[in-house]
Amino acid sequence: MAKSDSLQGSLDLLVLKILSKRPKLHGYALMTAIEEISGEVLRVEEGSLYPALHRMEEAGWISAEWITKENGRRARIYSLTTKGRKQLEAEENRWQAVTSAVNRVLRMA
Image (cartoon, rainbow, N blue to C red):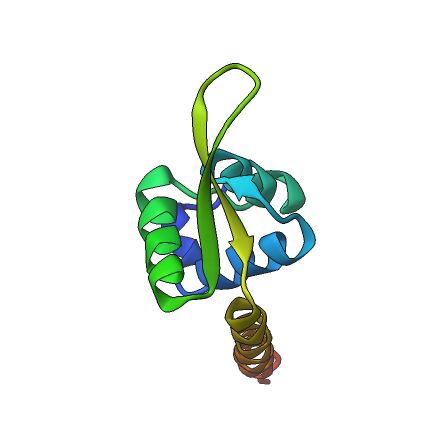
């Protein structure tokens, strides 16, 4: 598995993309989704995810609410906001530009 620091700069993109397809996930479910969807290549630590979620909530990209799960435990679930959808588009465009630039360097003769 990749070190969590290899996700630097892409965590927001990953979280926003997952929430765009799977709304109302709690933090652990987001960590699991990133790992599963990436074929267990990417792994996010709680110490990176929760501060990022808090920052994204403060920015208005995601909203959060407390729910009580079937087992009686409370969980904070996250959803993408309209502002978050716009940010997702910007993050996807930035990611495409960065990966394109990296690929040009890798193809250099």
